[in-house]
Length: 122
Image 1 (cartoon, rainbow, N blue to C red):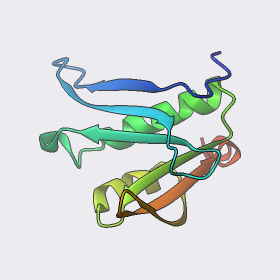
Image 2 (image 1 turned 30 degrees about the vertical axis):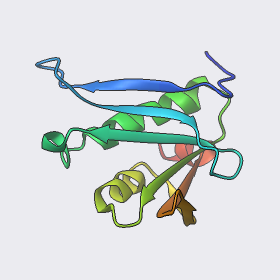
Image 3 (image 1 turned 60 degrees about the vertical axis):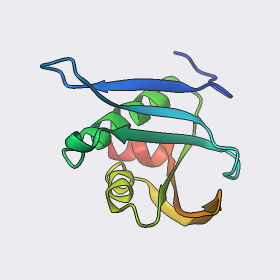
């Protein structure tokens, strides 16, 4: 149990099991532009592997780890409003839409996920 991860950053690689090919990452860190608690989850998958469920699977695994092994009660996620795929991943992970947020002159959808909701559904 890593319990208190305040201020820490965790970045995990996403690999194809059969070939060990690196296809992306999933990570968590602090997002200063978000209101407290501002722990965020984010991900990126190589274009040829997108829309195959890898981002969702990696994100759910990281969320489960964070809520099971740390003191986190809330996780944030943001996606550019026109990034349909990323918004879908966030929805599939159980996040709730909170608001639109302007960060670095770009408009994002801001979502949150509470530990109690995650545990209830998993």
